[in-house]
Length: 312
Length: 116
Image 1: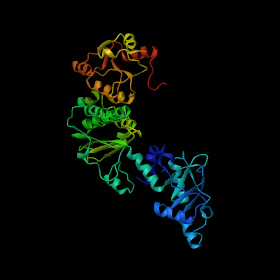
Image 2 (image 1 turned 180 degrees about the vertical axis):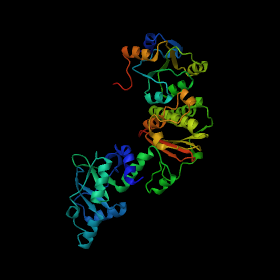
Image 3 (image 1 turned 90 degrees about the vertical axis):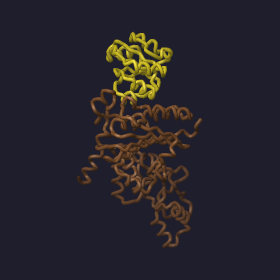
Image 4 (image 1 turned 30 degrees about the vertical axis):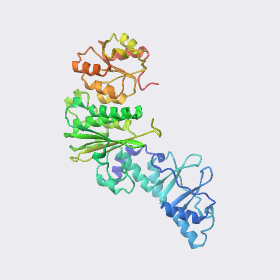
């Protein structure tokens, strides 16, 4: 399959990605009246190759790049104010611009990044090529990461928990899914929900976690042909839940993603499962979801529920 | 309306959780698949179902439903009723078919979760 048709195939998946979904915030900015030497330092420390210049209301005035800095150094203008040398004709992206149009801008203008502005030209974020890649991967990631290598290959802290994979024995909660009896699907989810409720987590989070884990647990029982585990890790700002199995993996992700598709047996359907809504349901109830699966390589579902700032 | 009123409209038999009948109900749904019940998931909602196995109680508890009404007068396994009782969960049974039961409750003012 050539690149074009592959892109077309997934186009609908990415159709709804807007600039606001993939832009990075907050943006490091510079005021127009500071010296270029200051911009140089900022770029050195932050390792950016370009920074937007904004006024007091964060309206976008221009952008200053490594190239501008080199010019300033060459012509001995390093102590002049930024506004003297910044690029004023900035190509910006609107917050609601679609991924397709953003990609086109990258191709057309060959800039490394685009500032993102709203209709009042107020800076909202910034998009680099990496953010596009991240945005696209994240879209897949919501559903599927086929290959673990892809995670480590990404320089960004792509894994939910930066650093090492959370270790199983450090989990705050563990439940073994050791049955293939569909009638006991949801037992682990119910215990986990109670566990969260007992620890005074917000009712809304306990409920959403219960529903999402229920679906994941049912998937292990119905589809994995193996035992599995539910792990829960409590953090100050979030609840991370992993539902893992060493089973057969997801063979056809495109179909599994599609609401209404299921490979469940008639018996399972009779028992009220196999509606093909497991993954779509999970997506609805989590703040962040990644499913890592390979054929015969097991399936690992990671869910994140962000906590409100203050927990009572 | 309160659940007792919904039960009256459906001429429903209360199998467990009688103490819950005075709770207020605004939203109602109907589903046979567990995933659909989970997807409806709005706390404090009544759900009509044709599903009779204990699993439906677990699903309802996780979804924090107010209660379940089994339609078409189906015979419900004792384990299901027992599981509901253990959790003091409101389980009812009506002789009405699904469509009729839905229609009656909607006519009486209950809303679907997709309605404002």
